[in-house]
Image 1: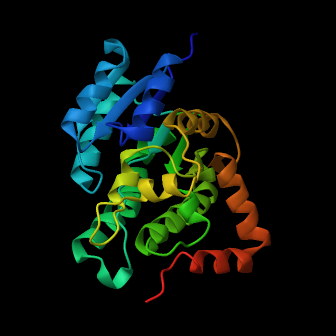
Image 2: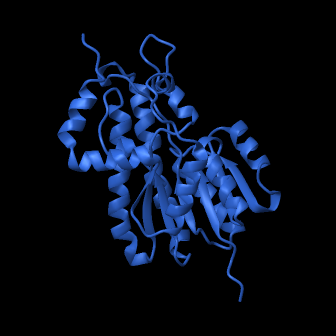
Length: 266
């Protein structure tokens, strides 16, 4: 008896890491569910994949009812299988925490953390029905160390890392494993959302000026493939991510001092 076609449910599929991952998995024979809050971006991604190998739907990961509809539609076309849930949707907002608008704080927490929890809870019935199912949550190097002017974003990524570790243990009773993808700076639109107060300069501008490496989305997609097939808990994306993990573990005080140097004098 032939094995069923592997399937992956991708949030944030309308751009960036989500789009690159969807394309990669489709190229390697998987059925791909494409989900995003951005209709135009989702339509563009869908056009890059074979018509019989994809399902696309617009919904917001903050919406639990939207999750229920999306998972039900996905299950109908995959014979109630979900081999991988790629909880990838995320937003970036920054600034000193006392200067951040309340709406920005709520958005980052609701999408980056609550959206992941919503996805796990909505998808678990299908994952339990799929032998060898796996959840891959997009965290970040920001889930390894705290950086100034990124406090709320960092908090959500630390939380996703912790959630991943807890659920990997918790879901072992169902045969479902959980991993996180932890990228260094990736060349996506999210880098443009961290703008300096009163300036048109973005985080990407600062990184480029400081000659800080920015990795392509294709590298993140390949590591997402590794995370979907491997047995490790956390998957770094890029050498700089590996170095950051090493430094945070073995030289935390040196890293704290370096991070404080990024804060301008009053």
